[in-house]
Amino acid sequence: MVKNQWYAVLDSKELKKNKPIGVTRFSQKLVFWRDELDNISCIFDKCCHRGASLALGKVANNHIQCPFHGFKYDSSGKVTSIPANGKDRPVLSNFKVNSYIAKEAYGFIWVWYGEPRENLPKIKFFEELKEGFSYGGFSEIWRVHYTRAIENQLDVVHLPFVHNTTIGRGNKTLVNGPVVKWNEDLMTFYVKNEEDNGQTPQKPNEIENYEKLFSLQLQMPNLWQNIISDKVRIVAAFAPIDEENTKIYLRFYQSFMKLPVLKQIINNLSSIPNKIILHQDRRVVLTQLPKKSELKMDENLIPGDLPIIEFRRKREELKKQEIEKES
Image 1: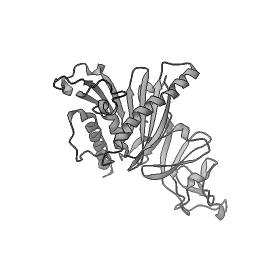
Image 2: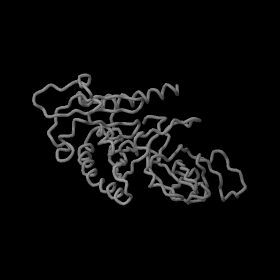
Image 3: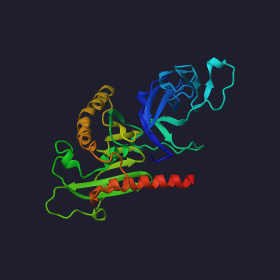
Image 4: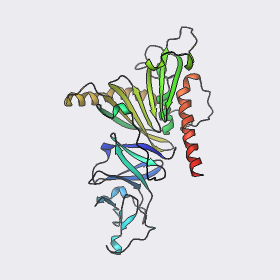
């Protein structure tokens, strides 16, 4: 995992007010709750007393209360009340569990995976989607590391083979470039696939006016966007569950329909073709070994894999930066 990053880990709709939810993220069992003011809290889902799951408890006065013996925890993971000891008895400092900073933004619950800081960076999201778009979507769990799931969406070579009946029609097997550009932690890659008539594929620096080509984006560490048009986008968040599982949140964003009822119908119906396409990917990606990708692996990569190579390089670069800061 790349530390000191904001990760989208839940859909906002999954977390109801005053109803805790337990999930596994980053290979850790966590409990989230939303208080009366819509503040989001996230602590480890294991009571420091007898190890019970706090997710089975309830929200009381903006704290979460263990269902076993009534211990109350605040958002920092500190026990503030032990009923058996008396309500006015101070609680020792060792009665606590680890916590994460969590916030809600853009319809997701985000976790700051790293050390707390006074001035945390802003949560990064695709600028054009912050206003004027509505969305509908679905989620599902894949038995792969989140890096593999992300790399599938960066793979411009697989389209005519995996998606030959859907978005890969046209037998465009020859891959020019692709062109990859970074703006800080935002990757944009431009696709120019075409039929193979014996021509030599163009190198990235040979492609003119690449900005006019079909493009996709990756916002590190775990957001992806398919720019269908100015008014239609597909967005995916890849929530890391553990080393072998990822929860994918796939959304269809649109701004062309404003009428409330029709807008929601269109957004909901979008899940049908998007599931078909995503499941074409899943059929193959779940067979990849190893389940987690790294910068250097036992693979023979080709020029068309450039977005994947760039993603791996950026992950490695960010991890090294955090290690250097800690040393």
